[in-house]
Length: 318
Image (cartoon, rainbow, N blue to C red; front, top):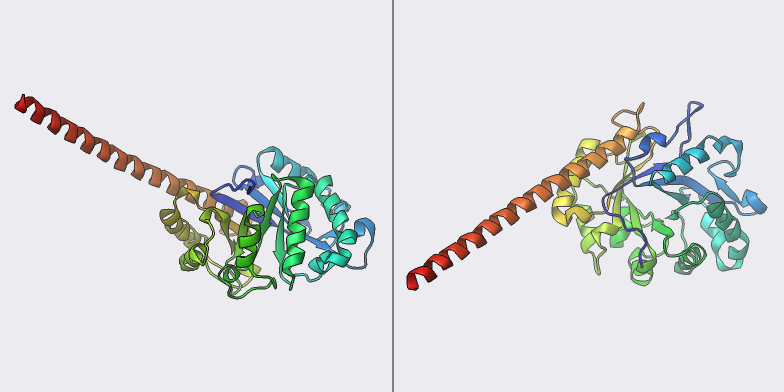
């Protein structure tokens, strides 16, 4: 059973906690994001004890993060799920999780998840990893934290149609074998691996081979052109949101942004990106629901007219 496959997600990655020495709080995202993805957790080969797990450059318990953890708890208290991102561009994390090392390096990760009460883990695999390694990790997380624990993966978008892929394993095979354990995919539509505008590549993912339900594909885009190659403006992301919801209905999987601290259109108020995306989905949903009500009203009028004609005909015949 897939846990918490919420549709119309607004997901934001939160990796840069300080900008020019000033703490960047995620609290302004309350009410606008469904999920905050806390990045990036790493496992360090050769380290021991708590030092095995780092959040970016420090242990999660480091004073560097002292302002952050209460804010994370506040987001959770207001209904936002907080998911830890494991891996990313820095290599090595998943080398620590092969069979011969799993029992050494997994337990400290499990302890961090428990200590900070994370709601899930986003497995961002950007190194060659075997299907056996990723499968064991998914099953162990589910065994330790239960079916409600969120497990997402973050492939580049092209990997979901068996194109360019940074992970080593085949995502179509993984979906066939492990789909019930994967909450959804945070597909990276940038860096030359895809674009969300226009929506054609998203369509190809949904219809490729056995297909993936659109509620389980969240389109991750860059929030600022300085964050990588392949930036799409908020206006064009909104245009694709409208097109995708027209195609797949109000159960579409939503969008996410890499990353929070410098999000446009106003990087001094980076929450505006998430607000824009949430509003776009709400407006489109309202339009579609109004259109559906109009269709239903017309159909009701037509049925009433048919009944009236039948009644009149019956009265004449009698």
